[in-house]
Length: 182
Image (cartoon, rainbow, N blue to C red; front, side, top):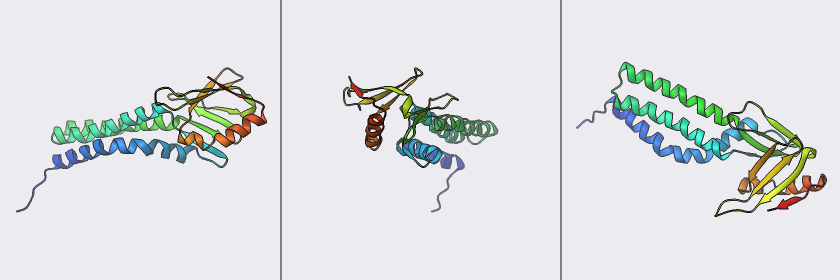
């Protein structure tokens, strides 16, 4: 007996695969993209801000909707147009999320906030204070870097941050800035 699959069933399967794989892809895709775009020689570590994961999730949601629209609306002209629109719309969150990052290098700390066009880069000499906040309720401790121009950036002391702790302590000792504990 031969099985007959309608095209709508193929798009239903694609939609289900996107829905199932998205949580797993969200674990490593944002960090991989940030490493590909921003890593250069001398960078200790690149960090992906947590709000980026939500924006990547919206991108995967648009891809899921594109497949489901084709499945549920029987591949008609309207459903094809809506699906193409969803695929195009999914590119926007992926692009926006890929622009936001934080990095620690031998020469500087750099970051770009989500939805910001401006990239900030500060040499180690521009650091005024560093504050270490204790972890609360199973979360990671945080380090806040305050710069002489009034800006600040925070880093969670997760596994990625632990890789640059020796560099951080060395550079802070070099510029004579102590870590304040709170």
